[in-house]
Structure formats: C-alpha cells, structure tokens
Length: 597
Ligand SMILES: Nc1ncnc2c1ncn2[C@@H]1O[C@H](COP(=O)(O)OP(=O)(O)OP(=O)(O)O)[C@@H](O)[C@H]1O
Image 1 (cartoon, rainbow, N blue to C red):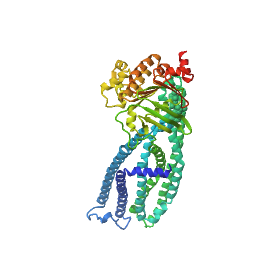
Image 2 (image 1 turned 120 degrees about the horizontal axis):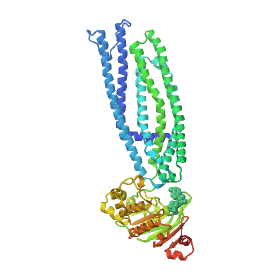
Image 3 (image 1 turned 30 degrees about the horizontal axis):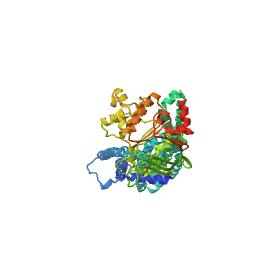
Image 4 (image 1 turned 90 degrees about the vertical axis):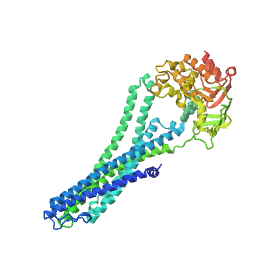
C-alpha cells in the first residue's frame, strides 16, 4: 500500500471524528486569537508607559476605538491593561483545559477504542491461514501499538498540521500588518526548515518500519518462551533463551537509539534555525525602531511575540515529521489486517437445516496450503451418518487438514465437501461450526472455572447440562474431586490439569454443543495407556448417534472403529475394517504388527 493510499484511508478514518476535530480546531483558533491579544496588550502597556515618560509624542491607539476615561492616572491606565491581560490569560487557561479534555476523550475513549475493537473483530473473522502466516507477536502488536500509532495520525498529525497551517496564516497576517518587509526578512530561514523536515522524514521512515519489525520479533520471543516454558525448562535452555532474548532486546535498543540520535539532532537544529529569525529581528527591527519607523511596544515587542509563537509552531515540525512516519507505519499494518481477505466467509442465502444426520461426502477433494504443493490429493470418501471412522497416517500426511475442511477452517482447493448432501460452503457458518465439533490434540483451556471452560461454546448452558456433558466425557468424577468442583479456577492455560484431564474437559466442551459430527484429532496421543482406556470408554459413549472421525495411531482405538482410512502423502491408500486391513499387506498391517511386538 503506497503512502498516498495510507493517507487517503487515514483521512477517511478521521472523517468519522470530524465533529470532535472541528471542536478542537475551533478552540485552537480562539486560543491563537487570545495569544495574539496577550502579546498586543503587552506591547500596548509598553507604549503607554513610554508616552507618559515622554519617550514618544503620541498616545498609542487602543483596540476597538476604546478611550481611557480622562481622570485615569497613567498608573491606573497601565493597571487596567494588566487586568485585561490577566482576564485573557485566565480565559486562555480555561480553554486550554477544555482542549485537553476534548483531545483526551477523542484519543483515548473514541479513536483507540473504536479502532482496537474493529481490528479485533476482524481478527476473529479471519481464517486460520492468516494466523499461520503471521507470528503471534505481530498480531498482538497490531491490536496494541499499531492502533496507537494510527490514532496518532489524527491527533498528532492531522490536528497538529491544521493548527500549524492556521497559526502560520494567523501570525503571518498580524506580522505583515505590522511590517511586511520585516516579516519577509525574519522568515528567511523558514524554507530551509521545510526542506530539511521533508528530507528528514524520508530518512527516518524506513527506520520506523524496522523498529516495528524488531519489536514484533521481541514480542514473538516472549510469546514463544511463555508457550514453551515446560520444554525450555526440561531441556535446560533457560540461559540460552535469555541470551537470545537479550540479543533481540539489544537489536531493538540499538535501532531505537539510532532513531533517537537522529531525532535528537534534528529537533535542536530546527530550533537553532528558527532562533536565527529572532537575531535578524533584533538587528533589522531594532534599526527600524531607532529611525522611528516601528513603535517599540505595539511594533517591535508585539512582532517579537508573534515571531516567537510562529517559530514555536515551525519548530514543532521536527516532532511532527517523526509522528507522521510512525503513524504511517502503524496505520499500514492496521489496514493490512482490516483489508485481509476473509477466505472463509458466510455465504449469501446460507443453508440452515432443521436437523443434521451427519452424512459426509468428500468429492475429489484436493487441498494446498502453498500453491503447487498439494497436501490432500483427489480424496473421495463417503461416511454414513453415525459411522465411526478412524484415520491412520504417519506424521504430516494430511490427517488434520482433512478434518479441518469439515468445519470450514479452510475450503478445498479443488472438489467439494458435503454434509447431508449440501456443500459445506453453502452452510450457515455458525450452525456448521456448532454442529461439527473438533477436539484438538492440545486443547486450549482458559484461566477460568472448570464449568466456564466446558460451557465455552454454549455460555447459556445450565449447570445440569454442563454436568451431563462432563459425565459423558468421563470428566465428572475428577472434577468433583477438585477443591471447588465445577467452580475450581484453572491456572493460566489450565496448566494445573493432567493431559488426560484436559482432553476430557475438551471432549465435554465439544459434547455440550451436541454435535452431529465429532472430530477428534489424535486425542490420546500424549496419554498413558491407563488414561487412554478411560478416554476410549468415554469416547465410545460420546460418539453414539454421532458421525465420528478420529485420528488415531494406537491399535486399541483403530480396532474400535467401523472403518479405518489410511492416508499416505495426502491420498487414501487403504480403507476397511480392522479385520479386513489385517488380511491384506500394506501400511496398516505394518503398524498393527509393530504394536503387537
Ligand atoms: N498452515 C500451514 N501452512 C502450510 N503448510 C501446512 C500448514 N499446516 C500444515 N501444513 C503442512 O501440510 C502437511 C499436512 O499437515 P497435517 O497437519 O494435515 O498432517 P497430519 O497428518 O495431521 O500430521 P500430524 O500427525 O503431525 O498432526 C504437512 O506437510 C504440514 O507441514
């Protein structure tokens, strides 16, 4: 996405908050007017004092044709101006406060919250392939840091640039009204400031991109080490992991220091250039005052005040260029998520069946994660309602992929998958996923109560329904033995449970949705034979009346299936009952033999 496109999208985003932005700009305009009024009142006070001390022959003109009452002494007149200055200063402070409140509300309670919610909602809709192609760290950073960087475009760039433009016009108008030539001379360095800002901006942009990338890597390291804490400890890799984290940390630090050094050099250089304007003013403006062409108070002093304000705004350009680049980098990453294709989406006129029989048809199905590299090849398979089918195959032969086509985690590259004679792509996605339950090898348990974990897919389920599902999954007894039963809170990721207990909770969670099709991806792979026996008994019960596909390697599971399918390099190479397959030579026979030894 080009910079131009990103800016266009950001402008569209900002348009949503136009009311807030307009209020902020209005307040800024008033604040600018008050700043000029303050400077002018100061100049006026000086000119009044000079008149009474006989430095100048003419009494200064008061604004709006106001005249001081004749009986006012010079001191009373100066005090009146001082009181007016105080009132203006108080109003300015109050408006500054209101500005801070409005800008804080817009930034923290509106833009960030809305955008974060939008990105998160989109992440929920994206298909699994998006997650597989992005490290977790990158995804987390997009919802957090990049959203913040994106909003900085609105309050830190758009609003600031508008304020800058407004103030340049505003202060310039007043300065030109005082003396056009003086204005031109004093602003001689401004084009240099603009030019260096644009050049600086081009230099730092790739540096900010690189920063975000290094930060992603750092978060990824943390996420991986948290996920793999048991493996790291068991292999004694703590110090190696710490070193690797330190390296990633140092890389980020070095890169950020480089950015910081450049930004730190640029800011003061710009300020130096703008200060030169003041030196020029002293020389040329002082000369004009000395020859009587420019009054001291309402001329030179007011001009100096205006120039100072103008220079401050121009000086802001240095920080503005950094913010622009940071926000463009962040926004590009946020828009990438918002624009990512939802490969699997809800069809129009979705098929919403009254009941599901659970009949499955794979018609010449092929699937590729990466184009040109098929993982499933021309699979044709018919599974009857209520049939229990085991899938056997070595590592990486496509077993999980075959299962994942049923709840439409992916759509086939070629061919059609049907449930009850209807292409799954035509099914109402929510119904399909509710009625096709998948239990993974490594079930995810959340840091919540056992009851809530089981009811994760059915938050409205009653306690009795939760218990029934747990009984069916042979989980009820061990749950009752925990300190608070169904109210026991599991540790983060449910770490306090054994592998077999986690599997049974996952099974109960799946059964609570009363699925017509139950998919079990190697549920007993990491479980000892004793627990396996318990889980198989639970599965026997749970799969009654449901079509069940179970990825399995152990003979004990394979034997209990109505049919076994053997997958090899994405193709079905054998199928039949255990007895039939034992009678023919082939991979099934070899696996069975190896387990009987
Ligand atoms: N998201 C992905 N992107 C690219 N390739 C993938 C992806 N997921 C799996 N694969 C590849 O597809 C092939 C089949 O993977 P799959 O997980 O379906 O095999 P499996 O038989 O279930 O293996 P296992 O027994 O290890 O679970 C493997 O070569 C794997 O590397």
